[in-house]
Amino acid sequence: MKTVFSNKTFFYLLISFISLLLLWNIYTLVIGNIWSIIPISVQVILLILILSENQYAKKAILIWVIIFLIVAPLLKLIAIILGLINDAIDKTKYEVNIRSLIYTVISLAIGILILDYTKRSVKVERPVTEKLEELQS
Image (cartoon, rainbow, N blue to C red; front, side, top):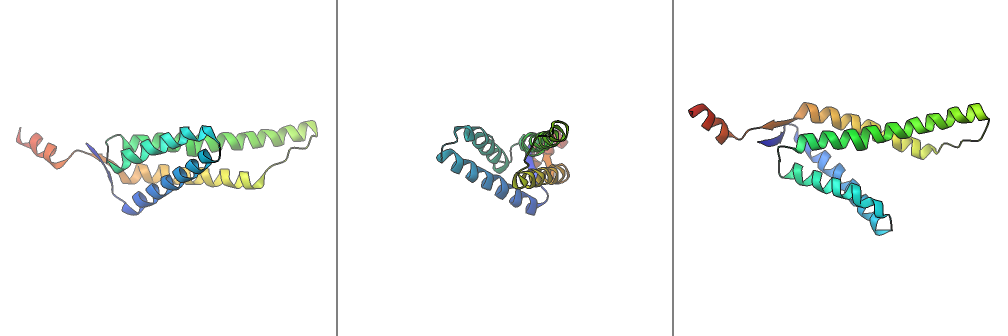
């Protein structure tokens, strides 16, 4: 079994996106953020699975997108909304970092796009030799 990308443009964009995130996380590790090891590990494993056309690449992409690019930004948006609600109730000053908010919305949008394109254009197929052996038996 192997993973096949029917849309090569999506394949190259996905590899480029994951590689850019990997470079960013390596940079943050170098400047002292030890927690960058977690996303670095996930992204390296993801790239290995995709580039080796492993049968689990599609599942790995879906899990990665759901956790890191959809659920995490949604939780951040919920935190911002709750902070604004708390501000309105307690009459305190809750400051929203607009740059962070825009980054969160963009991450969510990218996650939804990757999820959609992965479901539509990534297939797990058996190699032709396995298909021929099955037909012969």
